[in-house]
Image (tube, rainbow over all chains, first blue to last red; front, side, top):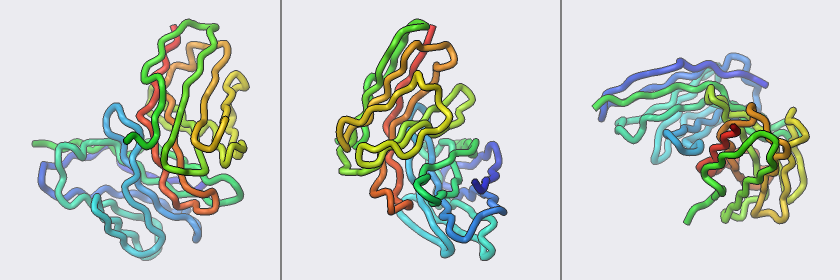
Length: 112
Length: 115
């Protein structure tokens, strides 16, 4: 499986934008980039996904590098509720194995 | 309405016991999963079922046996519990197996403590 690399932790101030980076230099052409987050004492929650083009939804934006070897999850205005572990995941779609393989993620701390 | 619900939320038991964790989803999804999150917070896939059929069975001791009575339920039965089984177990579901970008919806987990 192609792997992703994320910083262990990041800090942000409340109401400021946050850019969470992810490296995936061994990504294959058919791998989608997914982001999930896990708030304390909860299950992971889907945030966004994309293939080549940048994507926006109500939660966040996803900026994908032209060579697809890295991506950035952008939270436009961080709130205290955004404090969570953010996982960047490559969705494997070979054969019947369509599970998500989680890495260690980035622990985001939002400071008031 | 809770989309993916697990029971119980907490489970404390002794070594050697047998226990079950139940999971139900009301999203009409075809695929369900069990993940294990250990004390270091790593999330690992254990099993996946599609339309009641087992499609993923990672390297998990055969003391763990998933059962899917119907598409909406995937239960996890664990025999002869060991200390190392202590973890948070998450159930999840997603759309059709051919739609591999269908997001996973997770339950809030069952914290299993084996003493």
